[in-house]
Image (cartoon, rainbow, N blue to C red; front, side, top):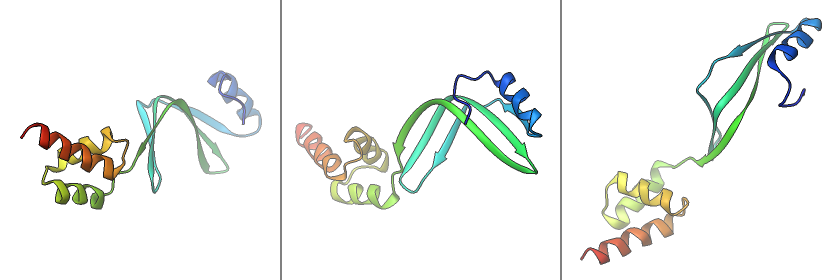
Length: 114
């Protein structure tokens, strides 16, 4: 709307001229969950904007995306490999959330340790 480099005080002053109230929200991080991902915004700048009783939020910061791991996926890895849930999650992350790769990784690790 106004660009990420606009000073929050300037933005608040501009918005107030149009009858729009805004305030900064001190946040450590913002997490948005979709059906398939978590969007994690670290070092966020969050501005709450109120216009005619309706609140909207402008958020900027460093963005990380992380897939949402379904319980069924972890259970499948645990059933196939006999490992713990924690080990399954660790392997899944290491395999870039590819279930088959995670299972293979665990099985290969078990063979090395045999």
